[in-house]
Image 1 (tube, rainbow, N blue to C red):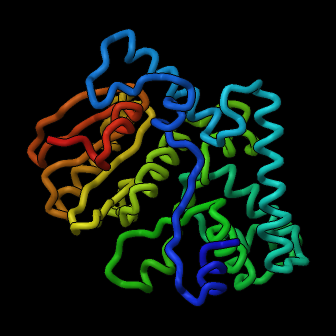
Image 2: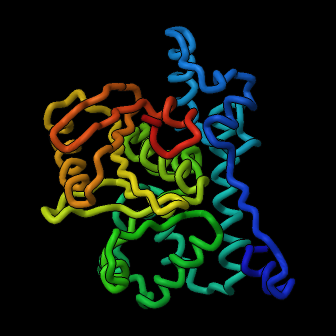
Length: 300
């Protein structure tokens, strides 16, 4: 049952507890790897954690698939997706027109951490002769969120209308599911990394938005914690390419200036650096190290 169905059955006398697949830290514990208890690892331990983190981005955190053969893992995760489609969606919501639903799931699983527009998707279906109304597509997207298969992140805006009309970014429940069910033969490290960052933030129940600067540049996450404190997080697989580094920093600088924030974070696969700039301090942090922290951003 979905949490809202339980609340309805119990007439509201319930407290919901969300259970996700293993986080990276939980997967380390499951596999008997010492996470270090906050201590900064040495070179040998750092290499191990980097290796385990990349393996986590490929394999994901579902308990049943931990440490098993790759072909078997992929089959199990594909079965998970089929069960969600059949039981949690088609049977629960009495969906008869499953073609656009399956097409939407395939589209979203292959474009996680990307902007998604119902209008564009509707026109795409229409061009292929697939009949489905925009309202139905909105319902399907809501159902996919209710079943925890995908999550939606809106743009930061004071106007609710702007939040509604702007495309939303889509994230999946597990990186292993993305790899097992997508058409990509090689992992897209940038998208997998951003999906990973979202899931950690989502577990912490922060308010998560993406941010568009006045110049039109995008910062992946604007986070608001339980005390109303805001932080900016940019995600990039690597910053060694000068053009990529310039682009990511420029968007973050603009957002920091507009939000009047003096710190920002860039999460990468394996790069680490601290920058002192005219806009404030930028922490460039490897994702595995960031994941070992209990805070959305590394402490000062």
